[in-house]
Image (cartoon, rainbow, N blue to C red; front, top):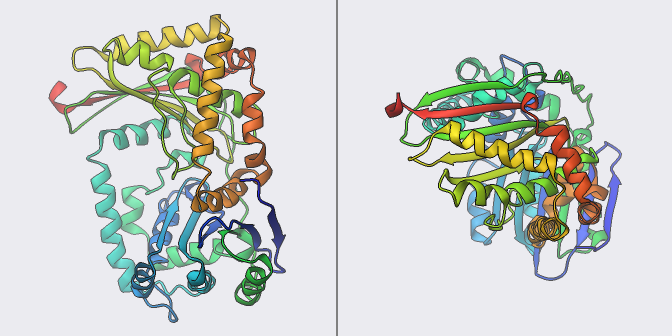
Length: 426
């Protein structure tokens, strides 16, 4: 994990991060673009996610379906993800086949075709995806809670977009979004694995150097005003299960409080992974598990804190036990939070929480694909030094730090509280 990282910018502004790892004959490549739902306005919500789909439809040099077959034949893996702050494309391949991924990413950075028939076909796919999400109680609850939590900032929108925009967006809207953000000077190319840096860099220059830079649109997100009172909402929909969610406004990934809040999360609900490819650790020693699950107030409890560009949310999600009520769960939740306010955590309990958070972070940073992930991901909201110092910063968190951030962030006036009631409970 401590191998030397080569960090440089090409003449067109593309940031290149390379990390040699010779433990297996594999190379993982991630190409990150600084564009996500944060960069969308009403009328084009969901555009970033839809553009991600369109980039799998091919270019003149690599028609749709060609890469799928080639990567499968080589035993490789590829995928893509869109989030609120970024979009990323990844390929993990045998080391002697990685040139295929390099060529393809260089080509689709500027040459994706956005055929109108393909756009129309994908509209049906994405609308169907959205309709499927609407059968998921937690999606319905999350969407309403994001809208309540963010009334000014574009984090208010779900990544998939609003149905009205999915039905009305044109091919020109999507292509304009693509050409505005898919620029070398708005991207980070992160590669880890079994290669020689000089040769890899020479090949990257060959393929990417001549792609012209452009004017990156300014990130125009307005700061969300400070919330001054608790916001509560109830959502009804399909299913048989009642859910409760508490979302607290939380600091951005580069805020010093982020690390203390990460330890608080581990103590309160069990550690959560920042790496979407990371594994999990049991939360049965956490305070909320003991207070809610063991006492049969909830069937499950989980929480999560994301590293983002702007302040986002610390989310606690609870599946309410059939024999209890959401109000009983809220009372028990508030009692545990008050314990954090009133009493400094014991040294042994805090040490366990720090150890679990550090272990989960380490587990999610070991493989070649995960190391390539971290190279680029950390640049989306901070820089690679943030990743390198993460474990040390967790170790520095004191019991007093945990109490302080609890008192600062976990207040009723700083949260949105949402209840999902299945239709058969009405």
